[in-house]
Image 1 (cartoon, rainbow, N blue to C red):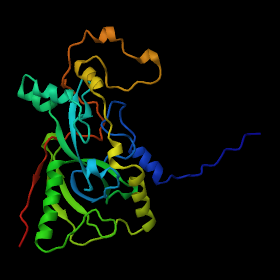
Image 2 (image 1 turned 180 degrees about the horizontal axis):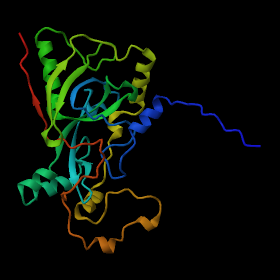
Image 3 (image 1 turned 90 degrees about the vertical axis):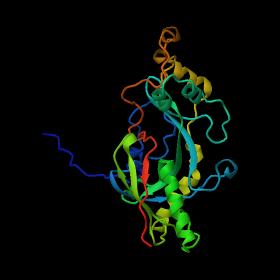
Image 4 (image 1 turned 120 degrees about the horizontal axis):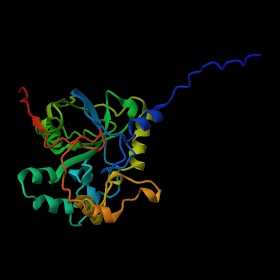
Length: 288
């Protein structure tokens, strides 16, 4: 007698599975962030976000603003990986990447290795709220433009607004044009009407609990000075190794390599961590 076939039954999946898939790394190379939040990658065209408030305890180091200023070095080593500048936050170590940039022989190499400033923040993508809080290394020029918009609203008598207030905050919209170093952010606007973080109180509280349990500064992935030196000189690969000792590099062989300071070629850093070098923010005059 033939065995009875099992009937298919759709199980579905929840928000947590969606967030886990969205935050999965596309490579196992070094990153400047831990893997606890999905990366926010602005789409070409219109974007609508809600910036989440600060929820960390170390306000002496990081302040109470919604973002923290960080320094990033892109295109480091043979694998073109991305690293935090060791002078970020309360780190006072010498930064080998800053040294390499200052000692570079050409303007092109110096520009490639130099530190780029970003405003690291957590946001809700209003067009994809199922992902929950996402982490974004916002271009500093865009962060400044948002702050200038807020300052103008206050100056014009609009009140002391707090865009990150979970009860009476304001969504932010902008357009993205181009890619990489040709990226432009235009039509930056603060929503005229305040709103709560989410109409579903339980969902909003879940998001706030998450950013409290996993505060923004804790997401920073620092690598020590010796490790960075080895990456720069080519004596260590940035590719993360497993527990198998056979995967470790042979130092005797790697010492024969030429020093690599920002080797050209296709980047192997995460697809969700695009290098957007000094993006231009076009400011449009507001109607009186």
